[in-house]
Length: 161
Image (tube, rainbow, N blue to C red; front, side, top):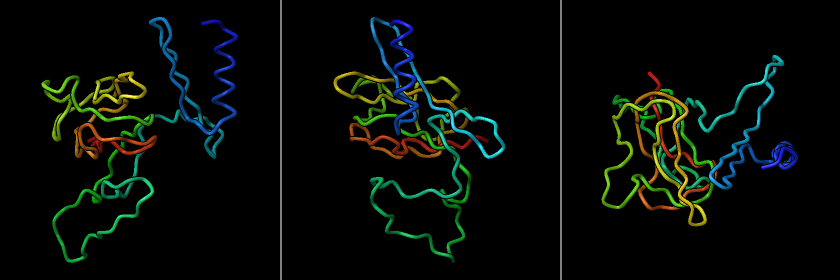
């Protein structure tokens, strides 16, 4: 890919609402991720993962959770800890394993590391491996196998401890 084409792609990401663009051509892959400015003037790389202090029950992004945790319930809940979310970078179909008869890439309780493939998202007949950008333990898988996912939808909750 020519330098002028790459500069055009960078401008496209900069001028648009998207946070990330990934293109594969002739066996080469280019990934452009937007940087966000913080209040102190330093730029921070915005990755596929964001920390959160509260977690919603797995629901479509536009739906509101219908159940609330009871105040008298003393058992720890998923919202009691701070988890790192692995979000979908694209619209597509979520697959937990590389093939229907293969074991899943990861299960609840598995320890994962940075760069490890955690799932596949199929988009337009292309299988896109989603790699973790955080190390930790898989606390929860938020999507069922072979179900559609939206851009930004939470796929996994990771306990970084």
